[in-house]
Amino acid sequence: MKVLQERIRQEGLILSDTVLKVDSFLNHQVDTELALQIGQEFKRVFGHLPINKIITIEASGIQFAMAAAIALGVPFIYAKKKKAVTLSEAVYSAPVHSFTRQEEYLISISQKYLGSGDKVLIVDDFLATGAALIGLVDIVNEAGAELLGVGCVIEKSFQEGRSLLEKRGIPVYSLARIASMAPGEVHFIDNNPA
Ligand code: 5GP
Figure 1 (cartoon, helix red, strand yellow):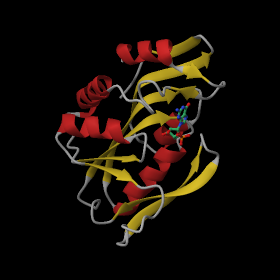
Figure 2 (cartoon, rainbow, N blue to C red):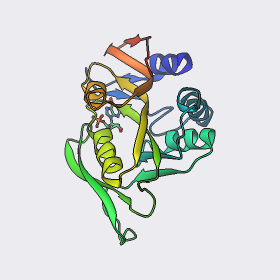
Figure 3 (tube, rainbow, N blue to C red):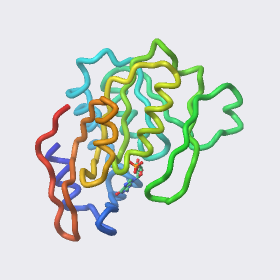
């Protein structure tokens, strides 16, 4: 997605070889026009599939899952990062190791909202080590739902996330795939098999 690549080049802050900060338009302040375009792009890629639900993880996946859900006309669910008091009912849950925070946490989704009849698209902001998305994949499997694909806004292709998902036979589509990055220099991979 060219417009996204340009924004990453112009506004992305490369904090280290592996961490990219995009707080000015994606992760803290959100450019809502761009978020809606991202939703349309996910519709272009996944819209031919019989998806009836989108899932993501709080907090930074929410605006993109919502944009994609609006574009596809389906609801979205965000997995909660710890069991809240309001989640007193039965949940599906999976442990996740956070790449950015270097800590373990539990994600959960109420069993009320995900089940064996569901056909799911997972959407998230970043694909890095894949740990967060694999947690979601485990929840989809536990629920007996069908996973039709994974859509990510930014993929750091030099980390192992994509290959871990593909090993499980999951189609992955990322809107901007970063091959390598250094201050002032971001290289993208242009080919993007769905
Ligand atoms: P993963 O589990 O694939 O390693 O990373 C999952 C989450 O970590 C992403 O959803 C994102 O919130 C965060 N993350 C991973 N790498 C980056 C990065 O380079 N920059 C930012 N801003 N967040 C990241």
